[in-house]
Length: 487
Ligand SMILES: Nc1ncnc2c1ncn2[C@@H]1O[C@H](COP(=O)(O)OP(=O)(O)O)[C@@H](O)[C@H]1O
Ligand SMILES: [Mg+2]
Image 1 (cartoon, rainbow, N blue to C red):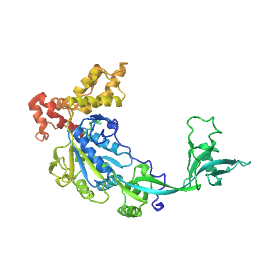
Image 2: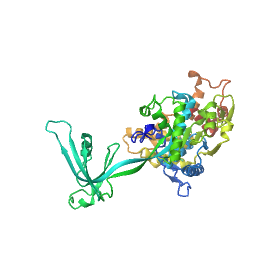
Image 3: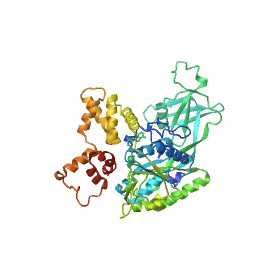
Image 4: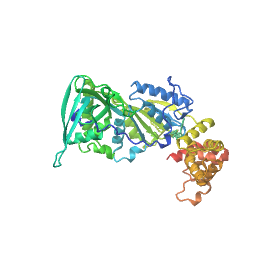
């Protein structure tokens, strides 16, 4: 293993920072033991069909059964597609790699599209590596430190024992410092990692419990270890294939992981690593943990990315692919063709599609309430009622965004609680998409680069809106308008 440079400390805590502020109230899928959705649980409200389906996906991932399969979450904006994916990520927990990217990110990285896709794929595949480390574990009999008279480095000795043996070890300056930092004294039971020199205190030995009755109640007492002082201990790390790639690509080095600036990785490096991982698997040193790659706003990918995905899903080392889109019939980027969800038919054919549906008023109210708690905002019942109305008429997201703004407005008038007047104020200060669109239609002449109303007007819904007036705009406008907002 050492030949791949996988040190103990190198890759343990490296997870990508995810942009999940809007979904921080989601703590899981909110399912019971039978994987049936609870009405409100773990921050999740309603959307039971999609959550039930996600529960089945969860089960299959846990059992390692659907690597290489792909799932599409399809539905209108603000119906909880991203929320369901985040809930799934939470439910799977830390042991399963979960990578989130937005379709458009592929184009903004300083590398080719296929390289970016490859990296996202390999980030989502974990390798669980079993490693044996040597440790010394024993009860401290005595620590002696000599401080040389003329200054210079300290030296010392530590005597450790088990129920069967006792040994004296020489100490260097670094170890002495570590022991002092951990406040190790006679009677402590400690382990020392032989490779890294890391010292951990397990507790106080029972044999000393009587001498030290003045110790605090937190003191943990443990048995004096048995047998040999030196032991082998099995440790397990999960690293992603991508992390192994980066560490081993010469020109990058593992510092690149911290900089996030990994550049392109050579094909040969990846081949070698795949071979090495296959070897470890055969020797029983490692297992592969297929994780999840979530591509949000997947309609932003172009035809090349889609065809790459088609092929990549068939490889041995493929994660579970979950995608989300809010598009109906849409153009496949990079072509002149339209297709359902803007995804080519051959890829669509491989997908299991989960659809999300718009929320009922009670659900919107509950979600807003949860967001208030999450953002630490007190709100009166009347205000929540009004906000719910706005959530239904405008959009759930707009209503969610109003919470913080309204709280600041309330704060300004020195009120501890958001009231109807604060909601009204924010509603007048910040227009939602629908009002903004209406405004644009009315005053289009005043704006630069105005393309509305010409022959090339694409959105059919908007024409309808104009004809049918206000009422239709509320229901119909939602999709078209929010589509604009997404871009
Ligand atoms: N069922 C739900 N339970 C709790 N919060 C939800 C639910 N559905 C959506 N939300 C929240 O509403 C907001 C909009 O939902 P989001 O998942 O971003 O919609 P989409 O991805 O479908 O456009 C987010 O803040 C999300 O966390
Ligand atoms: Mg989304």
